[in-house]
Length: 267
Image (cartoon, rainbow, N blue to C red; front, side, top):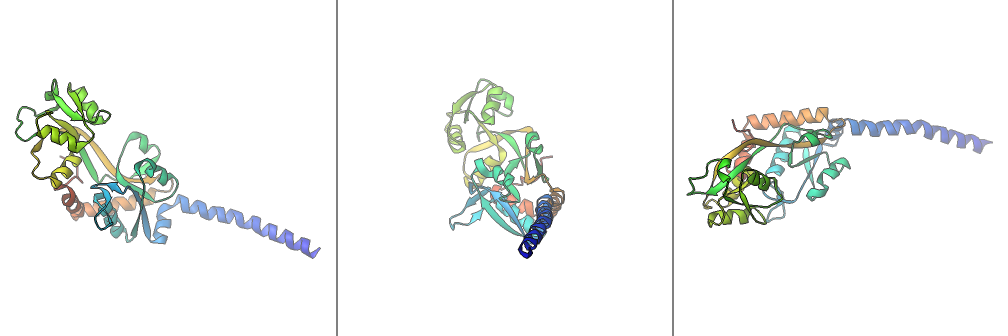
């Protein structure tokens, strides 16, 4: 009889503890900032071979524009920053699986993504750039592409933009090849985002190309956060970004990688 009473007591205690344990898990997942602050670190998901945004340098140290912005946000919040790297295909899925707190990898804010995720205020603004050889004065707008040849990867949005403006596409494998064709006069122009162009010119300042025009459409990249329980975390990150914008830190990091400030929208 005593053993039976003990067994009943143990089962009863276990049943009473289960709701409390479940409650604790729920509290952690629905109040992201509280859990992050308690642990003292912000875990950031990013790629590891996406230069100049997040990549390993010659000393095998993770660096890049997004990496430095993440560290600056951590400093503002009084948190250590830990990076978890992934290839692009699994990056956002890792956020869903709670492998990290946020994603910073030039994630563009889109209507589809906003349905499932929360976003900080943007920290990168990019535009479509019409790139021509430096001595070309005949092209100064996207309309001028009608009947001309542009060097593009055919499946990209930039290739579609070129076609929309009447250009014939000369297929290339990437941006560097496109630039070479423009410099050699084998293509009249190429279209890509201005951030990619600025990075290229920062690395190849003698490249004989220039931007003839920028699109009016802007792509905004921000910190991606799980929606559930993200309200306070989002406010904290936004406050940090505002401080970093006002004290010039974001501009300084941007100029280091691009030779220009891509952290503010063109007026």
